[in-house]
Length: 211
Image 1 (cartoon, rainbow, N blue to C red):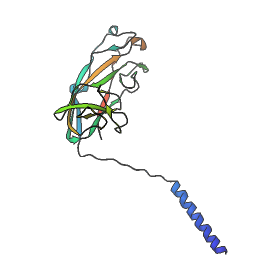
Image 2 (cartoon, one colour):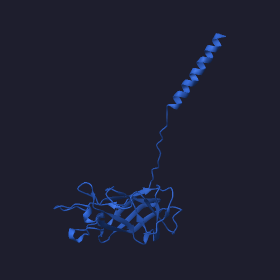
Image 3 (tube, rainbow, N blue to C red):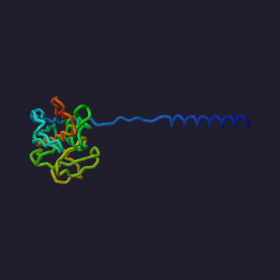
Image 4 (cartoon, helix red, strand yellow):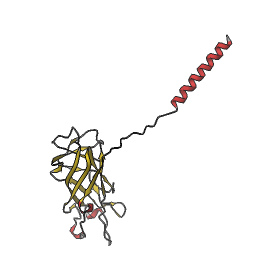
């Protein structure tokens, strides 16, 4: 009787040991798709909006000062019809007063100089016809109409050939659009200029995201 009991005890120990090993491991999966097509974005004027020198006396001490809107031509060309969206990343993140705008950098390390907004002009054209901008705030899971055609940091902006956004973007080969850049300087009493010139230092990256 003692031998069967000993064998049973051994089996129980092995089963328990196996369960402990399984609970101490986890899988890591790396996935993705390599697309055979590529899209190349470009901006007119080398993507530079230069407001030149502005006298501090022309800026409001108590309110925003809006600078003239500049228009750049955005062109996206793809090797073939491709499903994509455009994402703008603020490389001066944290320096804008509002999270849906792009920052102009800091004065004296902590004081916010101002911000600028990016808006797509109407109409946007693609593959020989008008396009309608649509917007996703969750990485492309859901889409909505974007009648104002304004893009904010990290949002996805796609395009459709009909004024309905819930169905998502359509594959396109060529897109052209006017990108309107409107700059606002904060009230001068919110930052200290001193005797030195202050640089307007906005920088954003427009990236094609394949869907």
